[in-house]
Length: 80
Image 1: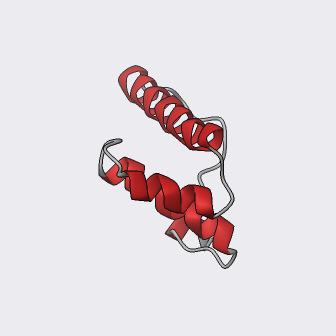
Image 2: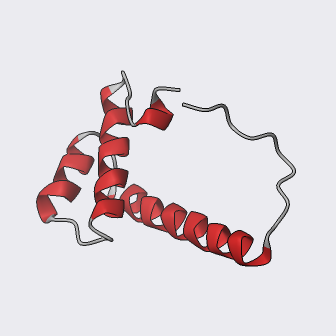
């Protein structure tokens, strides 16, 4: 539940959350220091790129599902 709220006890997970939020907030216009902070937490350039790909995949699937009114076949996540 904490991760869904943007909180993590593990510092590496916290860095991933912070980096992902920064990419989303800036629409990808992150600074070199944002990337360095992410990498200093133990992540690689490839993993930074993977965050971008995952955001893109989620965005396109959400848009597709909204346009096509896709019926969800999974239970809704609990409210946070």
